[in-house]
Length: 172
Length: 78
Image (cartoon, rainbow over all chains, first blue to last red; front, side, top):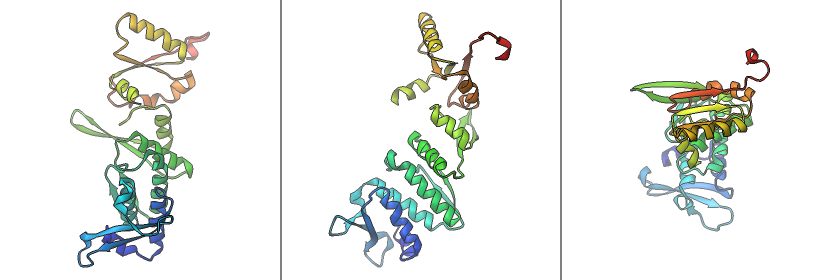
């Protein structure tokens, strides 16, 4: 993650990454990576929280913050490209999932990134649906189903996604 | 929500128009010891039932889907 951070440090994208972290910890004021300068792997993220005098390790703030940082950094480094995210909801509280998706939609749009994410989470589907509706964003749910050894994809647009979440029709 | 997941493991669904129908069919199925094999879904009206049929058909693991609608006064219109 330190290398991805180095690529966007002090650019406008840095602000977007911090804004994404604020979805989970609203007091987040800044981020940096510290540790062995000679080894990227040994540099770990620290954050400045407005109400706390000293910076604190990001890992002390829970899985959600680490997940959000990973997703945001990957996005801002995937300009004009494709980003694949497995089990996107890992560590993210259900209540902030619409905001997570909102940030992803915004950054993907700004940076021309095609995002493909997998999930087994109903809360994640609902968050995705809410974010698509909030600002009429383009998003598709592709349900993958194993039918007797054959993988079948069913494409569900916003309207059908709306029906599925409203009626709580199990599609996972 | 855990109850819903458990219900969704049943693979047979019966869509009905409303609460009364749901109650009638639940008791009918229970009398015949079938109530644990079929999930009855109250679709809250014929319009909603028809409008969401495409999505009901892609429910994960679905084996049989039954639909009960009222004949009302003009059966051909249904």
